[in-house]
Image (cartoon, rainbow over all chains, first blue to last red; front, side):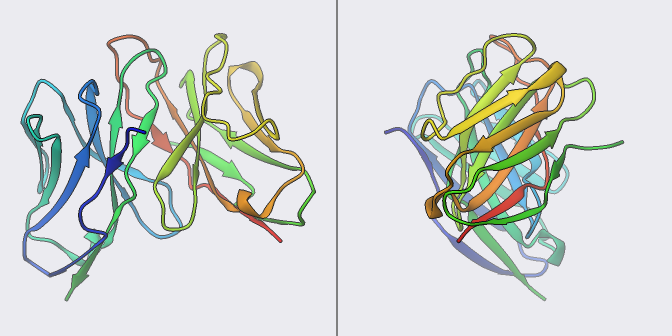
Length: 113
Length: 117
């Protein structure tokens, strides 16, 4: 079936470096793509989203890039901090009336001090 | 302000028993979702409620799973005759009203960790 998947299950970076987390999706009809951060024992926390008619969106220290040609999504975190250590999920929203999210399996980001 | 709350935070039960998980959405949010997260996995959609409309139950894995939303606010997810494979974290999310062409951010609760022995 269709799914959203991640290339790298674990990413280890040094504090201060930039991090890039990648995600592949398979449904070209998806309207929104969202990145969530999940810390241990907590629910997912919204980071940033991007609509399918855009290819780049920036937030505070984060940038999401969308390449619809190859169905690829990435999250860039600038100047990674220890507090960024968490599991990051990409999710796609296929629109329609329910707005339900289809999640990938997640990438663990470990920031080394 | 208050976010989405869920109770209990942890539940340990024996195989074959029924369990009820509770979700209190953010006040004013008319859309409510249940997701399941197995160990080391992403979230799996279970069910969706929107106002007084019929719920979208397309993600429920079996007829042992059911959910209610009373008065358009609090929701209860019930699992009957629990099995070991039901062990997971059950997450609830709420958002403002959804509709065709509209997307609203989903806010997640901390989840209920269910362990079936």
